[in-house]
Image 1: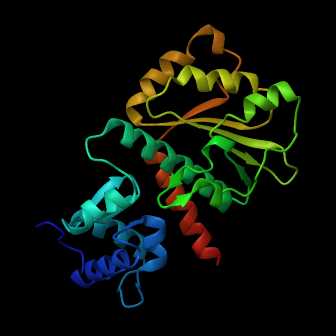
Image 2: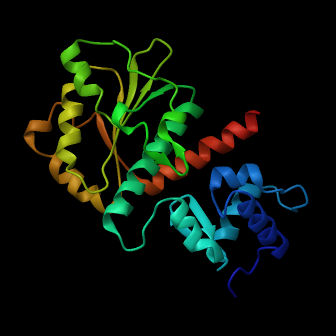
Length: 243
């Protein structure tokens, strides 16, 4: 039976929380909004995820982002998502995962940066500029290299204002463009990550196997959307346990 094993009152609590949030919510938002005080479970976060996944009252917009089925039309309009519109989907998807990487960096207590041209893009209903902790990129290197770094989708900086993570979201664009950026930034002690759909992993592996990328092959990792969201949820749980 659909939803078997999940207390129906838990489903009602999740519905109420989503209603208060405008008809949709990320798992992180639900963890904060759902009143689990009367739930007889030691793992409320897992129960919340199971609830939205097993009941037809909810539908998935993107990994980690769910909405009320009866509010589907209004929610998609609110998030500027046009059904069956490839351009709309690409725009939303890119800024959604860009926002997750920024927020993940914030949770880890890094300083976060995005390119100036992306500051008015939306993470759900917020501008990405409202999430980052740096208004401009610090002068951490030569101007020629700095101009290249300014175009990276998200950069994490440590307390010394040196880059420790470079992230490029590749939904449909050419992965080679991101790898060329990473090639020029390879001398910094930082993580280099391509964030993309799991279906692009094979393409990534084929491209980076070219001899021209030998210097950076061991430095760059592929992170699927699903694994990024799992990490996001994990870090949020750790943060909540510390508070």
